[in-house]
Amino acid sequence: MAGLPLSDDYPVRRPPIVTYLLIGASVTVYLASPASQLALWYSNDLLARLCSQEVYLLRWAAIPAELLSGHQLANPTDCSGGDFGKVPWISAFTSMFLHGGPLHLLSNMVYLFVFGPCVEDRLGRLRYLGFYLATGVIACYGFALGEGPVTVPLVGASGAISGVLGAYLVVQFRSRVITLVFGVIPVRLPSWVLIGTYFATQYFLYISFALLPVESPPTAYGAHVFGFVAGVVGGLLVYRVPWRAGARLSDAH
Image (cartoon, helix red, strand yellow):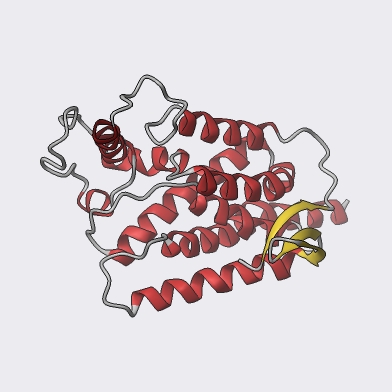
């Protein structure tokens, strides 16, 4: 990514409650997970902690092989507690609120905090929530279709947030965003430059790893690409089409 966004110049008309709730839910889930050292109810023993983390991810993360087959993996782990029941399609929702570490969580939440309020304001709270969840699910299944029946757990809100970025291009194309370029230099950039750079980078990495003989890339670039495309298409359908129809009706009167 070329830079880290800090704020945009779109003045929201009402508090972005849904965006704040999504951020709060993601942070809370992470702090309550075995990956967080604040979750004191998990064992402090390293091996037991790792086992708890493995079972936690197998239970709540999206696993492409399960999404494609519709069935839970048989005997996925030897750790205690691994005899849980799982409905694969539900994991496409729960995986959006899981994160692998504090940096993963922080980077996702920064993007959601900057770009989410505008999209929520333009789409409306309920439509925005449905849009966020839908693009996240599409990103999960798109990643699964692209990677095939791999068993690596998929976690993170990146697919849904990529959908928010795609929708942002539709609903607020002309905004400018204050961005830390290379992590230190604040620059005011057009939103389409920042978001366009993001998509181009994710698409390039997705195609590059697809050509390499590896089972699965270290980052789910495919989920980012599918989420972004779903966000653009969904933004056009949810926002632009009703808006244009309303404009024509107004003109007629």
